[in-house]
Length: 214
Image (cartoon, rainbow, N blue to C red):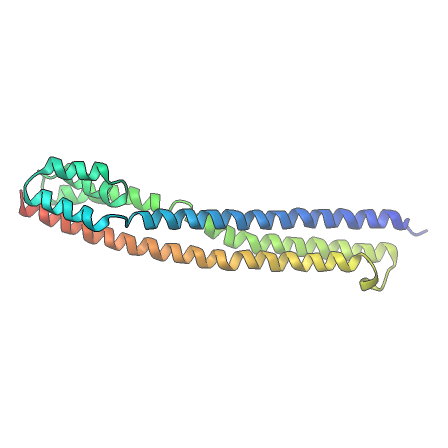
């Protein structure tokens, strides 16, 4: 005796409900990646605000041998550059190696701060297509289970076609999230690498100015 058709469709609808959850997870991934990307982008761009005038002020203060003024400028200017430079200024009367070590240690802390949340972007880029694939697998399992239980053959004339369609949409949605997220991640990594190089060059320049005006 074949199972009642009502029970079969209840099973199918349960599968579609699972696919809705999968789709909501993919949407959540897209929201997270969008928010993290623009948060990091804003943070990285803000580091450049007033950068030239800040460095010029530090240089002028050091050339006038006004160390306290240089430190005050660092306190007023928030960001990675000012934090690293201040670490060196606090060791201004020490040897070059001591100054560079202090700045290098602070630079590591600042780099870790700059890289904050970028790894989450990479994680989302890897997870989103897997979630979509999971939705596809669930949809196919549910659809073929319904075919086996009900004996329905014409997939297009039943709810089975909807389950299969939705299952494939989850994979497409997962990829639609993963691809731009991957691009966003690598873009941010490139921006951070450029900032690190600039931070190293600026630190070296400040150290030279400090030593010349000791």
